[in-house]
Image 1 (tube, one colour):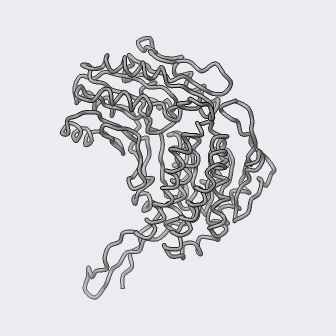
Image 2 (cartoon, rainbow, N blue to C red):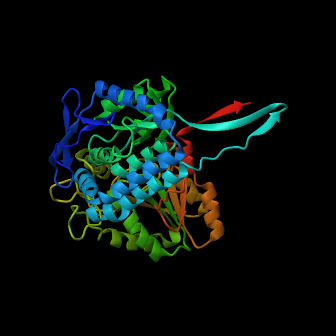
Image 3 (cartoon, rainbow, N blue to C red):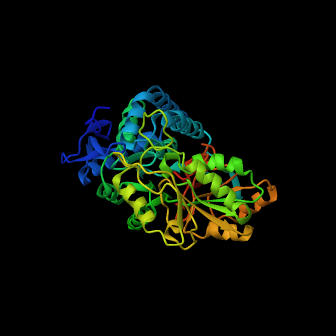
Length: 473
């Protein structure tokens, strides 16, 4: 994708912002600008929403089979364009190219193919007579124009997690990608335009004010966002004015419960990779490791040793375990948390930024933390892991649940009954047992508390983009 070739996609046509304003795009692996994107204003947002509204009647009237075919063709197009898609994603994020091509892109394609099939399998109650002489039936119908706002940690993946179920259900979409990582969404819109009617999928690039204008637009009936808790709170307040439906996937702060009977070698092996994947910029990253006191010191020593060998690096470097933080502000946020640790906390691995251009940070392990510490209560969203001891199951669950977020958790034990007790007691939307971080298209991804509400992926994710109508004959 050429440096300046990141236009908005509105009503089937590509265009700059009406004002001509642009935003610079910064390569986080170098800290240097590598292109620009439109800084869209209310005029651009209005054009995109009107295009989506005009396209809604036709698209919502298509058969599920027709929508399935379109999504399958988009999936095939993404697969064929793997090279340019990777170029776009890596340029904006700095993440290792091989990991994007090997891990993320196949999963992205699978999500499109899953929802292509799910479009033809919406559940519904059988028609029945619940009162004499009247037959009742249920219709599941699309909501209308969906505004979708996606983050910078997994730009293309989060865009597809939002777009695929919305389109499968018969809605039309206006997507606003993160202001720092719009390139892959723009390319997706270009590929999808060959298989969708004009206006079904629109992309407007811009900043927070662009997002605010999109949320407030009267044609929008549902707002879906993946982002920070603060962003979710602001969007929820704005959407309330027009009673728009909301789908919020917000921050995480995942606890990892390691019991004394766990396979420590396996736990160290998996977590030393999963905790720092994507530089820890993952809502489900294994960031808070809680360890039974009886094995705490042994686990900490092994985990610290492995973490110290995790290597940050540029996208095409031969040995790179994770890339840079996404932008200068995020690096500054991580540095601030580490520089203001309380005296009882101890950095036992890493703890510093990498002395090179870009926004790289060493894999970091912090021990000796207490539950009330900011670094425990707040989502770090960087390559930083805290380790805390616990005495028994009850304390482990209390510490795990003792934060505002509730997206994901994992429990590590050989005891099946203990795993089941933890799965029931942990207040999160996802619980893994003896593993962490794996998602599949068929299972829901969503949280509770400050992690938001609504589900991505799975049939539950598809149903979130529908509304139910009772018809009585």
